[in-house]
Amino acid sequence: MNELPYLPPQRVTEAAKKGLEKINRYADTGDLETFRSILADYADVDRERIFFGPGSDMLLKEITYLFSRGRKIVMVHPTFLPTVKSARQSAAKLVRIRLSAPNFKLDTKILLEELTRQNEPSLVIIDNPNNPTGKILLDEKAVKDILNLKNILLVIDEAYYEFSGKTFASLVKNYPNLCISRSLDKAFSLAGLRIGYIIAGDSFIRGLADFYVYLPQPSLCAAMEALKNTGYAVGNVAKITGERKRIFKSLRKLNIDVYDTETNFLVIKSALPDIAERLRGNGILVSDLRNALGYGFIRVSIGLPEENNTFLDTFSKLEGIIK
Image (tube, helix red, strand yellow):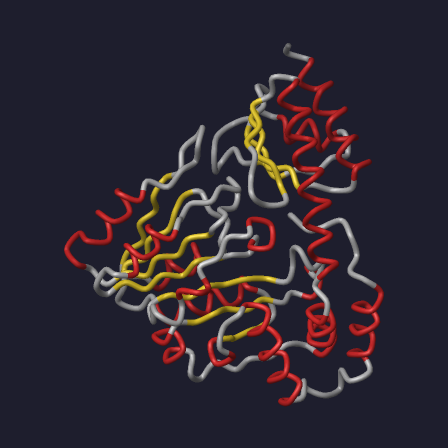
C-alpha cells in the first residue's frame, strides 16, 4: 500500500491522542483555519488556495465530480488514482494515454494533440510521479503548454512530492486552471489518519466555494504538530531513498529488470508471470501489476532494512527456479 514503515515522532502521536479527548466535538473553526495557514506556509502559497480533507483520494473524487460535467477527462494509463471510476460516471468522455515500458514516458505530443482535437473542454488529471510506474511525467514546459490551451483544467497529483522534490505549486497563482493535490500520508507517516490537501488556482477556488474543509480531531491535531517541524519527514525520505537505491543496485547485479522511481517503491519485471502469488506464499506482499503493465510486473514498497533483505533473498531464490 506504499505506507512508510516508520511511526511519526512521539510528539505527533501524543497530539493525536490529545485530539481523542475532544471527539465529542467537531473540529474548532479556528483550529481549521490555523491548519490552513500552516499548510499554506509549507506549500509556499496563499492560504485561500488551500483546501483539505480526510485524504487526497476524497479530494480528487470531489474535484472530478465538480469539474467534469460536460468535459472530456484525459488521464494516463496505468494510474491508480481513484478518479478513474468517478470519471467514467460523470465525464462526457474518458481518454487514457498509455505509458509503455521500458521508459514509461508520457508522450506530451500525443497529449496535446488530444487536447486540441475539436477544442473540447477537458479536465486533465495526471499523477506526477505516476503510480504505479514511479516516473515523473511532466516538466514545466509541458505543464505550461497544457495550461495555455483554451477550455482546459489541469489537476496534478503530487502525493510523492517529498520524494521527487518536484512541484508546480508556484504556477498556481498565474494559472487559474491549475490545481495540485498532495498528501501527508507518505513522507509524514500519517497514512492511518488520511490527511490530504489541494492547492487551487482561481478557477478551482470558485468551483470549491461551497466545499467544507474538515478533519477529525485526532487527524487535525497530529497534522498540525507534524508540520511544526518537518525534519522527521525529511529523515524518512532519506532513509527510504537510501534503501530504494540499495535494493535497485542489488537487483541490477542479479540482472533483474528493475525500474528506479522517484517515490517510495520500485517496479520490477520478473520472468515468472505469477511472481506476486509466489511471494505471497512466502509471506511477502507486493502489488501485482499484471493488469496495469503485464504479467511479471510487481510494485514493491520500500520497508525496513530487514524487510527489504527478506524480500531480496526470497525474490532471488524464486527467480533462481527459472535461471
